[in-house]
Amino acid sequence: MTDFPTMLSNGGVVLWLIMLVSAVGIVVFIERFLHYHRAQINSTEFLNGVRNVLRRDNVVEAVSICDATPGPVARLVKTAILNRDHGRERISEALEEAGLAEVPRLEEKLNLLATIAQVAPLLGLLGTVIGLMEAFGGLKDGLMAHPELMSEGMSRALICAGAGLAVAIPAQAGYNYLVSRVNSIVLDMERAATEVVHIVAETAE
Image 1 (cartoon, one colour):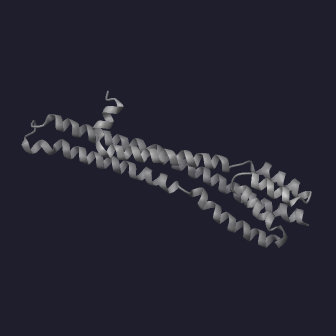
Image 2 (cartoon, rainbow, N blue to C red):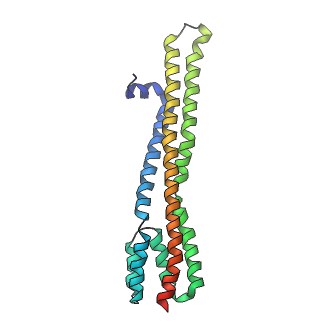
């Protein structure tokens, strides 16, 4: 069985490109995963805490709680608190504007991961074509003229094809997982926005 260093040397330049793309995908996935882990909070518990503080008419403490809590839900709640004296309609408008600003932040870099999932198999195909061209390039001098060259070309073709798929499959799975995390956070944002309007209006009376 071919070891990893031998595969790297046999794969050629295209394999190194695939490895580079793979490294970028891993970095993007880890960064987004950690970002979403910090962004997704227990919104019910958080809103209950804000409600209790606002009932004591302590707006400054409520804002401080929002500042100390990471994630878009806390920023939306802070927006509602800062607009609490402007009525329900203005609070809803401010929340909608804030929500529209938060979604692109959540979706940042996801397109890069999706692009990697699409490009990796194409790079693998490119390496396959180059390998086959090298493998059959010696046929003009006779079938047995360059057996080593043909073997190396076929090996490169298979290595690149396998590497491209090995990068594309987890990249696509990672992208789908992160999209599901974004959808979950956006759903929390929508629920929190609806509830905080009632909380702010109730405690402002």
